[in-house]
Structures are given as structure tokens and as C-alpha cells.
Length: 206
Image (tube, rainbow, N blue to C red; front, side):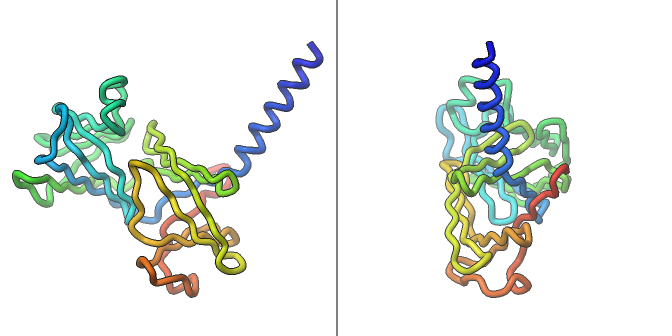
């Protein structure tokens, strides 16, 4: 019994140490747009891209408007979509959050719409030391591989990779300032004041 308790404490300590390395960020932009690609349907699913400030998340949508990470999730867990779109009512539901939408363009090829609500619950969780992270959108988690490389004291490039996720700009992490900056590809990083903030680390306890 004593050995089991000690083992439990060691495991709990290890889990707490791993959690302590994880940092939570919120994107500075709160605008979300969706592009539904009508002409590339496969097995009853339509490709869809969720955009937010140079972050692109590739998903799929079924005929009823439910959106999933991929075809496997749509088949195995159809009652737990990432979110749902009602094009006729011009609404979207993400977890417990509902929002009106505005259709910005629509034709036989694609529909582009803007989610009007600006408090959509999307957080970025990073563990730079372990090289992993995830995007949390309501109850959905998208796993990321995280690669950081220090280019100067206090400044590191950071790359986020995933089959579903693409970041279209270069990212630079400044731990002392609790921010991730963005620049155009190949532009490089100069001074914090000259580069836009892409994500801000949440304060502990928020």
C-alpha cells in the first residue's frame, strides 16, 4: 500500500510538472471566417476552412452542416461536431456559443462567410520544451507539433505543424513579453514594436 501511494505521488508530480510547462495563448484577432468548397465533395463531406488571423484550420462538413476534424471523426463520432453551420438561418454554433453569420460571397464553387460574434473560444496551448501543443476550439482539440529555435537572446522562431492546421506567416516567441509576434514570410524579426502581435499569453489563473 505504501509503495502504491508513493508511486501515485510520483505520477501526480510528473503530470503537474508537465502541466506547468504548458502555456495558454489567445489570438489577438477575434475575427473568424469560413470558406466552404462546394465542388470538392467526397463521401458526402465538403471541405471547409476556418480562418482566424493567418491561422487556417482545414475541416469537413456533412450535408446537415455539422463540421468535423476529418472523415474519420464524422463517421465514428457524428454527434460531437467541432461546430455546426446553418446556411439558411445564417447562424453558426460552436460549443455553447451561437453566432449570426454574414455571407460575403457565394457561388457554385464556394461560400465564404464571416462569423459576427467576436468572443469565439479558441485558445492555443503550447509546451515548447516538449515540442507539442494543441488548438482548443470549444470542446475540440487539434494536436500540434511545436518547434522553437532561438535566433537571438529572448527571441525564438516558432513553427506549428499539423495535418489540419496551417499558419501563413512567420511567428516569433518572446517569453519575457508573453507574446507571439507575426511577420510576413521571409521578413525576419526586428523590434517588438514593429511587428504585429499574433497571440498573447493568458495570465496564470485566467
